Image (tube, rainbow, N blue to C red; front, top):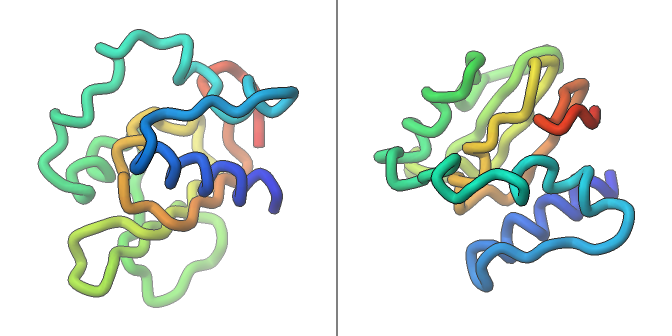
Length: 121
């Protein structure tokens, strides 16, 4: 639970202050390959919308599901259906780096997945 709160706060701080780097033992687990990758690895300008970001994930995302069985990855859009505000990633190979392009994300859950540096969550 603490991990989710830390990631959500970190993502929110990126919107206002730019990328902030946590310190201590959580640093490498939270940011993984994000800080080790070059800026050319992540170009959010290549995406036209939050839907476009989700479309380019290497796995399928259920958008605004009526119900969820807790085994599939889901996204919840805001009231007018244009921005991802909640994201639950479950049981996939790796966390896509493009989640950092979802600038209005308020809630992030990651279950049973690997970060690109090999750490699991």
